Length: 119
Image (cartoon, rainbow, N blue to C red; front, side, top):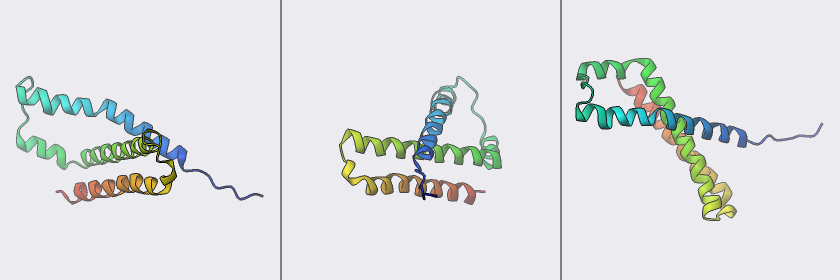
């Protein structure tokens, strides 16, 4: 039987798709709430103790970690193809892949560390 290596490309496109969906659904809600509704008084501002209790909940940490990870991998895939197709740097394929996805992995690790370290 021939030894066939499978490409990791479908996983990269999956992470790109998930990141785009998360960005389209969650980020606008957070921006409206914390950028418009609370500062302008359209909604009552939650008190500090309530926000801290929500942020300390493990489910919130998982959601925030998922948001960070998916958005970082969405950025990595988009930036990779911007460099490939937009700037025509296809000859630097391996370093571009290492930089883009390496930055996403390091950013994800940093987000996980910060979220797990917080009390």
